[in-house]
Length: 278
Image 1 (tube, rainbow, N blue to C red):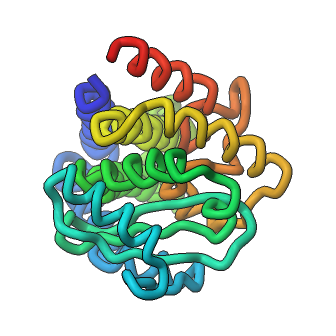
Image 2: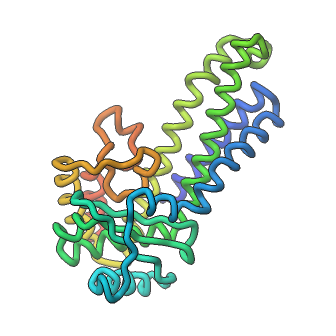
């Protein structure tokens, strides 16, 4: 179900891109914007693991330096029938974790020292299973596609803005309402849909992790992580917030539309439902 929702959201982004491209510069305008946005996101996709791990000063560990953590990742990777990812530790008291890498053969799992300090072994196992599911489902690729299409939409909106300032085309047939849609509504809509894709993939990783281990392990871990991140939020770069298992930037009510993660309470409810079904 989460994959169907993801593809539906990507279809909405694509339709919005085609609509704007046709209004502003025809099919060629949409294709040009998509190519340019794709070029900008290509490097982030290809080198995402190196960029993010260096950003948080992650330290690679092995079986000798972190036998418990390394062995847990190896065991879960074996259950998932995927290559062993690189394992990293981030010196940070705030409990959190993320996975990155363009495919299962080039992947890394990183955890903070804080998360290893507050979670029981079973809870940490639930977190690692969730992160490995991100890698297994190629969520970095899906996020990159969503970012590319949304980026192209924003580029078209900016082009419409500068076109209006310098007396160029004002939307199809000079329609000022169409120009307003391109400059304001479309970029906001694209961002909301892109973030919805991110939330959908979080649910997908929860579901995938529940296959590898007991869903209640992750449910228990999420409760602790939410509490600790509210007390001691981790300072993260906005561009990488979607990678972490808990996002300290997520909000309530309307702010949920602009959050990279679904509400913890909803994730826990779903996980507990899966456990009951088992």
